[in-house]
Length: 89
Length: 109
Length: 165
Picture 1 (cartoon, one colour):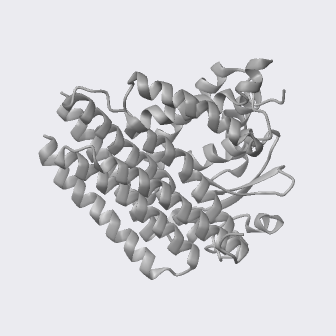
Picture 2 (cartoon, rainbow over the protein chains, first blue to last red; picture 1 turned 60 degrees about the vertical axis):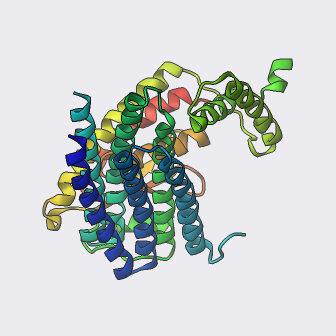
C-alpha cells in the first residue's frame, strides 16, 4: 500500500516545489521571494522524509533537521535585513 | 492496518503541502499569501513526519521518536518566521490588495 | 536554596535533556547521564541570557490549552485549504488590532504564535509598548467576533498560566 502511495506523494510535493519556485522567480517583491524560499525549504524537508520512507533508511532525518534549522536562520536573517537594512549587527 | 494508516498520513501530508504552495502561487497579495505556507505546510510536513515515526518504530521494532524533534521545531519556527516576514513587509510599506479592510490600523505600528 | 543555585532554569533543563535524548533516538544509560550533564551545564553557563524567571501557575490549564490549540490547528488547516482552493475573489482580507490584557513576554509570544497557527489569522506586529497586536485575517466577516474569540479561547488560559510570580 505504502509503495503505491509514495510515488503519488512524491508527485504532489514536487508540484508544490515547482509552484513555490514559480513564485520565487515571479516575485514581485522581496518579501514574496523570502516567503517562497521559506516554503521551498519546508517542501525540501517533506521530500527528504518521503525519500527516507521510500528507501527505508533513517539517515535522511539528520539532513532534514539541518535544513529545518538553517532554513529558519536564513529566513530570519533575510527578514532582519529588510527591517534594518543590515544583515547582522 | 498499519499500512493503511501510513498511506493515509503520507497522502494527507503531501496534499496539504501542495495546498500551501497553491496558496502561495495563486493568492493575490503578500499578506494573503502568508497564510498558505504557514498553516498548510506545518500540518503537511507534520503528517509526513508522523508517518515516518510510525514506520520506523514498527519496521525496526525500536521506538523512533526523533521525528518529533523536527515537528516541534517546525511548529515553533513557522509562526516566528511568518511574524518576522509580515513585520518586514509592513516596514517597507508593501501595498495590500485594495479590498483589505482596516489598513489604517497598520500606520500605528 | 542549594538546589535553586544548581538548577536555575528547571524547564529549560528538562527541554535540553529531552532534546539530547531525542537527537540520539535512544534511552541508553550513557546518553541519559551525558544528557543530564549537558542539561545541567548549558543553563548554568548561559544563565546571563535568561534574565526573567518563568513560572507556570496551572500546568493543567496549559495542557488543556495545548489540546485546544492542536485541535484548532487541525480544523484551521481544513478551513484554510477550502478558502485557498475555492474562488479567491470573494475573500475579505482584513487587518485587526487586538488590545492585549496579557503582560508577560512569554505569554505574549505564545499568544502570537498561537494566532499564527490557528484559523485564517497571522500575527503581524506588536506595538512598542506591548499593548497591541496587529493581526491579518484571510477572510474576516466580523472583526469584533474574531477578537472576542481569540481573547476568550487563547488569551484567557494563557493569562492564567503565565501570571507574574
